[in-house]
Length: 113
Length: 112
Image (cartoon, rainbow over all chains, first blue to last red):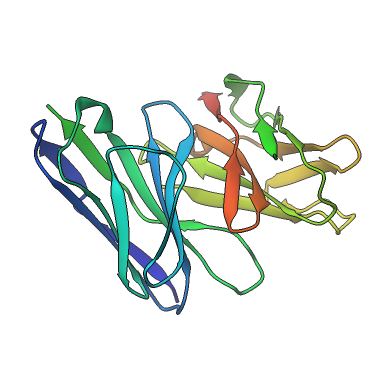
């Protein structure tokens, strides 16, 4: 069966510090991968998605970047965090099995102080 | 561009009663997928139910069912015999190419 992992679960970082959030998927190959941000009590904002290694599509211009160094690994990064980067970050994958739904990781709660 | 609208920011229902959450969407496509996701206080996103637009029959998963009206572009979620564990944010989503287009969510409160 497929599983998706995200870490860390919680992160507190000072303004101006770098960021690296990691997401890995097990039990599937060549998944589509997604990074979302969610503000408290709000909906999901798609940040990046990837349909293959090295292929990244950005949905929102921002202080963040994403990379996919391996088939089942998706990394969200920043060189210098802003206060506005605080939020809940969710990674998701979607396979080519015809069901078309996305499956989500447990999320990372990021607080920038 | 496709859009998804959830017009109810918050709904409440008495335990064991039935509640319906509304979702409308806008698209020019004829074949697509629609989803309802649940996000409990743990914030884990959980798929509740899926509907394929070419299927006439409304999807059902135990106490959860949808009322899919393709012509009206409406996709409501009915929860029967509401339980305390149903308390969560509920999001409606439309699949467009590689992405899901998300509604703003409805917070469901269950009154004991």
